[in-house]
Length: 299
Image (cartoon, rainbow, N blue to C red; front, side, top):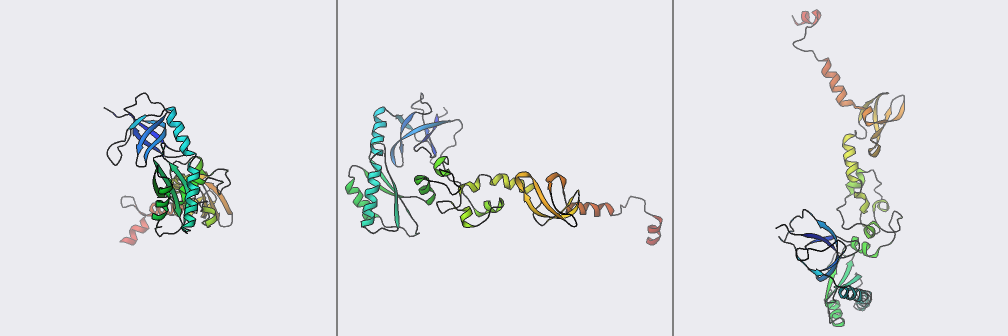
C-alpha cells in the first residue's frame, strides 16, 4: 500500500519536512498536526500532499501522531510568548559568564514546553564551552530539557530579518526562501557582476542568495555565444568580441575602420570555423580534374 505522505512546516518561512499521514487519512492542507521530531514533539502546519515521495535516508517516514486540537494551539502560543523571556535570560547569563564570543539569537520551546532550544552563533572557529551556561539555564527552566544549538550566519539573518542589501524591505531569506542553496564566486563571474565584496555580499556576511537566481540562464546562454576577445565574422566584416550580453543573446564586436557594433547571435559566425571551411574548400580533390599546368608540373 502506497503511504500517504504530506509536507509539514514548523515555521512561517521554513523547509517542509515529509511525514506519513496514513493514520489521519482525512487530513487537509492548512491543518495543524502533532509530530515527533529529533527535537521532541512539535506542532506544524500541513502545506502539501507529496505524490511521488523519495525514501528518506533512515529508510522510513515518521508518522503524524494526530491533528492538533484547539488546546494544543493555545498551549503552543503560551510557550511561544515565553521564548523572548528565555532568550533575554540566556543573554544576561552569557554576559555574566563573559562568553563574549557567542551571540544568543533566539529561544524556542517545543509546543508543550518539554524542550527549550537556545540558538546561538559565533564568529570564531573555536568551539565554545557552554556547559556552565546550559547548566545554569537548566536550573532556571527545570520543567524543560535545555539544549544549546549553534546556527550559521545565513540562519541568523533569516531569523532577525530586516532590509536586504539590495534595498528590499524584507530580505529574501526572511520572505520566501525555505532553504539555502550552495553559492560560489563562479556564479558572480558568470553573470558579469563586480567581485567587490560590497556588491556580492549580503547582510549575513556571506555571498548573496540572489546570485543563484539567474545563474543557470546565464550559463546556458554563454554556451551559445562566442567568448570575449574571440574573432568573429559579421555582416560588416571581421572583428573581435568586446562584450557579451547573455540575456539578450547578443555580442558587441569591434570592427576595424567601422568601430564597435552590436549583433544578435544568429548574425555572426565564429572566425576560426569559417576560416577552416574556406581552407578546406581550397584543397584539391583527388577525384576532380586538375588544370593542365598542374598536371605538367607533376610530370
